[in-house]
Amino acid sequence: MNDKLETLKHSLLNRLQNLSKSYYDGKPEVSDEEYDSIENFYQELIRDEFKPGDIRKNNFRDTAKHWAPMVSVDKTYDINDIQDFYNRFKDVICEPKLDGASISLQYISGVFYKAISSGNGVIGNDITHIIGNYLKIKYPNLLYINNPITFQVRGEFIIPEDHKSHFISLGYKNLRNVISGKINSETFSDDTTFAEFIVHDVFFQGEMNNIVNLNERKRIISDIGFIVVPNINFNLQDTIPMEYKINNLTFLIDGLVFKSINRDFTLTKQGYPIDSFALKSSDRLNIVTSINNIVWNLSNEKVIPRFELVPTIMDNSTITYASAYNYRYVKNLVNKLRQDNLITLVRAGDIVPQIKDIVSYGETGNFIITDDMIPSKCPDCNEDLLMEDVNLICKNINCNAKVKYRINKLIEILDIKNVGPKTIEKLIDTYQCKNIKDILSLTADQWTSIPGLGENIYKNSISSINEGLSKFGIDELLVSLCIPFHGNETIKLFRQLWKTDNIEDLLLLESNIINLKYYSKYKWDIFISHINNHKDTINSLKELIRKKYIDIKSNEYIKIMVTGKHPVLPRKSLEAKLLSSGYEISSNISNCEFIVTDDINTNSSKMKKAKSHNIPIKTYEELDGLLK
Image 1: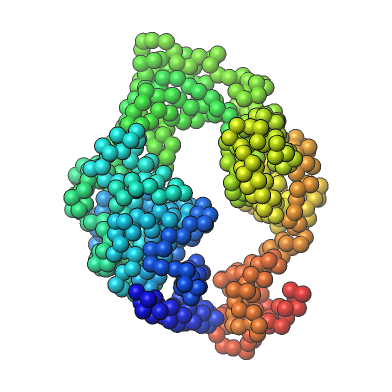
Image 2: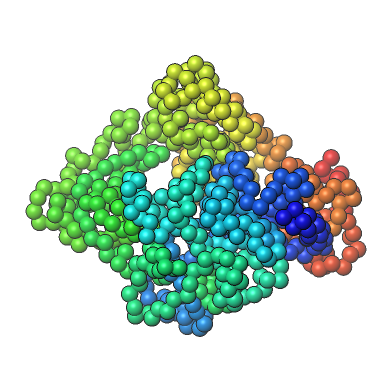
């Protein structure tokens, strides 16, 4: 094994040198994430800190990037859409759509390197400590494969129905929820070995990625030792099966996936793979149940209604609630909906159950919704509610539920670790904190007097908050106010005109801002109203600002492209320096404001394009002058 690792070190060093040369020549072969992974792996090898299957766990939350995005497949319930897909791509295969937890595994030169949960498709949890243990116990042959290739496999981590009785005996009801909890846990559980990892896609590095035939790609991965999702024969007139056997194990499926045999790897405008389409069972549109009751909950400033249902099974989950949309929708059902009503459900985006149709309002029994069931007071603070458009609004900015929402939003924006919603809830309920400054002012004794909040939680939480506040500026403050229509993208829109940290300067730009694309006078009025209502919060939080626009963001919208070699700095050091100075590095010549090179007279394709687009060209010496 030691000989193999020594050989691996040398091959990786050569690979890094070749990739670096390609990058500097303006022809990068791999993504930045992939290059960083190979470089980090090499550093672990030369420090003798890595062994095949070594389990590494630091802070695994949202810390790892997929080499290729894990995007969802476009879905339909209409068989005619699949027929159109066949007509476009001709040579199509069909696969069962497994209903597990999506993950990716990364291999570098044949060695298992990292496992990542799907997350948001670009970044997910580093779950190497879970999957590494899983492979060690169940598939040790997949820790170090006999093929020195670099690739990322994607698939479903899923528990077969054959093991359902085991988990029911432990008190679990839904196998998908079980496996999702297992892979996102901080510690490995032996029960995880009941699951199987079934591959449905692979991204090779280098020449192997030119293999576009999907069956050939699946064969290569199968030969390595992975279980690969099979092709199945399916006539468009057939009923979609609810389960499928793979390797004599039974798995639940939630539809079928149709793929072109020749992979395209491009995406539609909506962000779906152009060469794949999923067909879901139309039975999911015809789940019949009844509404039992209605409940109201405060979310930010809106009081949102939900229907309480007669429990029913949908997609292997027990459904007890469905969206009631808004106040106006509920108002229209007053004295109409009776206890023996019948409704059909649909799942929006496979997440939120919604009512597709009210089949029958009912003929007997009491009315479920009456005028006195629609709240006039906030369920949290008991202040009067206002009806705006189709929603009920709580205008009390000091409502505890809204304060919790805003503080948790700021914690999310600043990526503050170790401080969860339950901790925030306890602090606000006990000490009536109104913002994160109030939380910082609490003493260790005040924290530890609350059951469940010990001294270690206090120290870790305060340390994490202070670390997160290093990224806190006026932009983050505005977003944390949770003003409707005013998230990160809107504040970036403001920044096209607003170049200071003073909100007063922003307010003076009203006439220019309301004419910005995707903005309006209606939104501006909402913004002004919230700014006026939150003056005390804004003034209090301003004292915590540690990131100044003039120091860090003054060059935020200057996009530059760098090519060639800096005379002193390695590429990564140069890019880090540029980013810290506020520049944005662009890979698109037509999108940058100037290009930097070590040789103005070179005839590279980039330089020719820059000159044809009249984009200014600077030397590294000139760039150093700008940075100084």
